[in-house]
Amino acid sequence: MTTRSQQKERTRRAIIDAAIGQLSESKSFASLSLREVAREAGIAPTSFYRHFKDMEELGLTLVDESGLALRQVMRKARQRLSKKGSVIATSVKTFMEFTQANPNIFRILFHERSGTTRALRVAVAREIQYFVVELTDYIQNAGFEHDSAYAQAEAMVAVIFNAGAESIASKPKQRKALENRAIEQLRYIAEGAVSMRDKNP
Image (cartoon, rainbow, N blue to C red; front, side, top):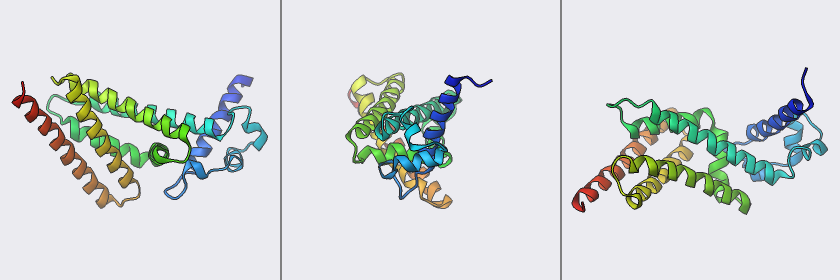
């Protein structure tokens, strides 16, 4: 038998999935209405409030879930690297695969980064910062001081997020070009950092 708490969690999940499912290149979270989400989730609008205080709270939940999903994907990419593998190429390919398989999850992070709701902008900035911090730690383990590692991580995250955003509405041939360009740009950043470090030991 399904308990009341299990049913509540299923309904909450249905609301989240309904909101994500309605996003598109031309429709951001800010343009969704509570009634649209409730209808898609198969519940009455009044039932929405049993799970979320308002649409902003739902948006914050989507941002949190999206950021976590993306970080988990990138962690797996780094874990499966062989000693001869390219961390940059593997990470970019994994990121681009994720954005293609889950475009609406990425749209949450990209669209709301400059959206109309301050709370969502702050939440997205926080998720991107988590991403930068994890990458900073990884780069530090490769022999860089914290400040240098952080500067590299910020630049790399900007490159990969922009490439991912462009790739969502692109055709396969264009996506491949974006992927190759991102890999080249990240290599320039990494090689430049190594050169600077070696000149200033």
